[in-house]
Amino acid sequence: MAERRIPLRKCLGCGEMKEKKQLIRVVRSKEGEISVDFTGKAPGRGAYLCPSVACFDTARKSRRLERAFSSHIEEDLFDTLREKIVSETEKGEG
Image (cartoon, rainbow, N blue to C red; front, top):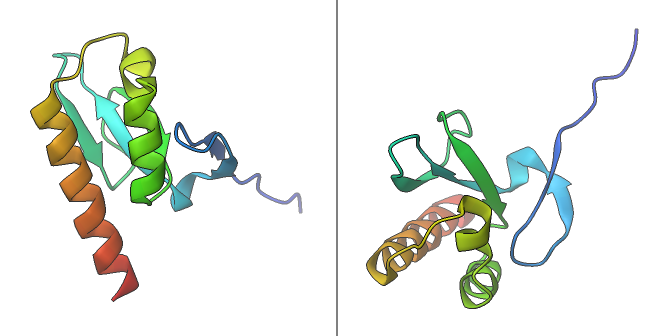
């Protein structure tokens, strides 16, 4: 029986290829709403980040999320995304 391929995605922060399950998906819906998708199954355009604040800050500083979604992202949305990433990583550690 053939082995299943593990889907890989590239982190926008560090640029490393990692397993899809290890990364946090940020998604832009058809309506243009951007949110964190912890299930990995929400419909829309996805971009991936390592579950670390450092990768999020790198992606934010270099505007990689905005380029991935081809749209401007408001500062308050960045703050909300960062809080969600921090809270989710703390849940995973504890």
